[in-house]
Length: 378
Image (tube, rainbow, N blue to C red):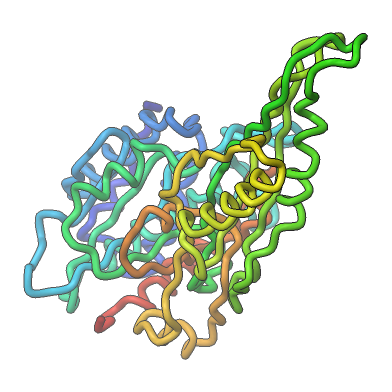
């Protein structure tokens, strides 16, 4: 971990208003940017946050590289709200003109890897947690800084959630411009295999698996699901990889491909898979043999949604923040309870060179998180 000295004003007892919280959050974000926290390599940034939490008077529970606050104050008679965002980043892409591991201030922006996705959400939710916890609330409040979100890893939120009590509602911090995303698309990856028969390319022999794959590829390209979501639109099916052949003079006996499926809330991943598989099986039956087979990698990253009538969403809308459906995936997909995705920044800046967050977006996020959640009745 970097040799970071924390500002002593950042005691949990001193985080009493959004101005103090804003400066403390900005300082903590800058320290996070300085640390390489690629997915599955979050130990150093988790060490930083754990030390910060301990120094500010909190007692985090650490599970691998996930940090949880609030477990010691649970009241069984109250509902429980979870605040969550992720501490890992993607790898820095080519094209950075700033040092991705050095916070750089230009024109009210903080440049740095993970500043927008999702460091600003982490520090804003953490300081909102401190402000909200400084007075009685009609709910239990938990905070989770989780790892491995960018790779949907097994040792991130998926692991930490197993140690949490029943959650009634969660706020997931991702860059949405502080608009509440009340639905998000799920993700399913499918591996397809088309079978042929090997032969010498110079002779009229063998069954070319590439040619055999063409009608199945066209089937997938043209496949449409009947139900379209008013928030998320249709299920999106994209063939993204294809591979066949061992050398130029051998007829390939196998052609493999990968399909990326982004489900809407009208279908679970397994329902969407079954419809695609049935269409492939119908084509197999027409050909009289099992030419193609599909296999899912996982069904666990389903689409999620919440009603506009939920108290948190209603309050946000009354304050002038329009709800929307998000096409991008987050740890919401791992949560089997009501969630809203909302956070500072813009998703168009994520995973790009010269990623940044506006300083004022951090202040706004802390202020709004508190306004949305203070004395909220579930």
